[in-house]
Image (cartoon, rainbow, N blue to C red; front, side, top):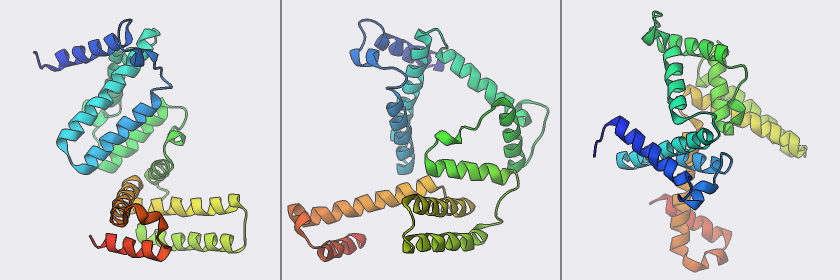
Amino acid sequence: MDNSLSEQWARLQDITRTLREPGGCNWDRAQDAESMRVYLLEEAYEVIEAVNRNDPALIREELGDLLFIVFFYSRLFEEKGVFSVHDVMRDVSDKLVRRHPHVFGEQKDHSVQEVLQNWEKIKAKEKSSEREAFLPALLRAFKVQEKAARKGFDWENARDVLPHLESELAEFRQAVADGESTARREEEIGDILFTIVNCLRHLGIHPETALHRSTDKFQDRFARMTESAGEGFMDLSLEEKESLWQKSKQK
């Protein structure tokens, strides 16, 4: 079999088309753009998990699954006569060339900061509306802060953020102590989360990565403590469960 890029591209395109045609897969034929959203999200997160595991074979596999979703979505719209996967690839290629004038044009930006600033200027001309609102909350906060920083509105470093974080924590404690409304407490805890993201950004830590790792750590420890307790875990007192938790942290 020819392993050239064009050959494999055509093969995946043919497979996708066959799955959707009469006589193909009933499940694939039943899908539409809305029903496939959850699978797009799942596959994207599975790529991230594979990267977190630093497993090249798994990364390769998950990237393939994600690529198939791109082909599948493109096929859905090709069937409606809107666009094809070729249009998708041409558009992204044109965009990359357009947004890298320092590489493909005469403009010569040298620093990373200059490249990012120019990217934002070009992007602003191309898009009339912001899209961050559709992102997960932590990622949205991170990107909004990055954009503000590129326009010169930012703290100098993480140390400058910490006093602001302490102030937000104090405001939240006061809101809880005063019995403020749920909406008010939600606002205050949101300010804390936003400030934490800001601090992490200055430290070069992505909030999504940090929270994923902490959740994985909790999940692993909780699995160990429930496994050690067996079927009687639910009947243990809170003190006994806390003791098992502390033991799980030592492994």
